[in-house]
Image (tube, rainbow, N blue to C red; front, side, top):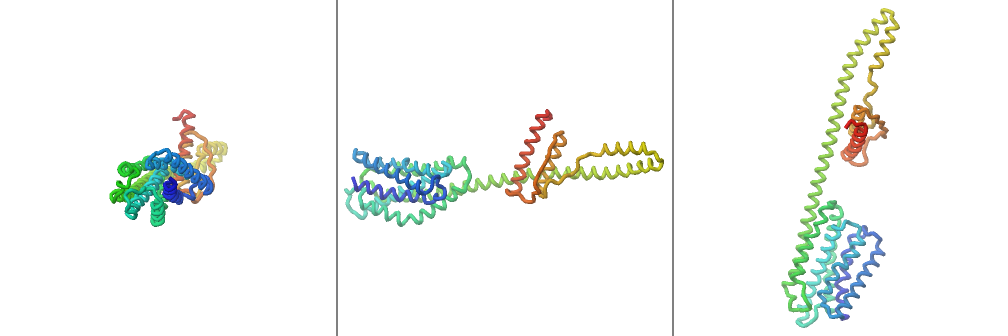
Length: 356
């Protein structure tokens, strides 16, 4: 019994290091608290393992407890979306299965004793050697995979993406999970476990790349939508500017006519009529004029466009804007965000006034 418990410690302890190493900067409570939490869960598992083993429960069945039990601290400690955590946890557990299966087969080959227990101290040593030999490569791959998962923002996809690797692992478990018998541990058994980890490599590669491509496409579509909205705003501002230019040309033409009329009143010496004419002319001049709100043309176009809309709807709109030349966030996103806010404000005022 002691030998079997020591075997479990040799198999399970290294997998905790593998699980948490890529997430040292993404822990909720810091490294010390996480270590204490993991140690407590490992102690609970070993305690349950010893009790159930003493009661005659099959070791293979007892080991299944580790799957949800080890996942508890992982989900609690790592600050990430649940779908992403599950996606990475399945990979860690598949690695454990591959090491355990390979160690069991190698133990049979080296022992040449068909009646031995697959949870002996020899198996513990072989498992530790396999971890030492494979952990650097696997950990490098797992770090890279975890970083790609962290940087990929697709919440709806990650909610279901973990089902694919989990399905592969469950199939392998159903066909290779064994009782305490060495007769079922053969080359095919070991090959199945190794193929599992290879399948996980392939699955994770294609899943992550597919999600990245999806995210890039969504980002490109959003960017194109931002540019279109910005172009529409600038086009509207251009038409507004063109109309103001036309109004200015017409005003210059009218001004010459007014000057002739004023000169006529002066020539006749009719100051009373001249005063009345000048007062009427002054009242007919529109008060609004083109206004530059900031030095950023795109942002200024958005402000001018909605200021014109508000003025046309009879809405008093006061704009106080810093002399912005560059935006902190990308200009298209900033203009669309600003445009949406101003559009909502103008529409709300129109509804309140009964104009929309």
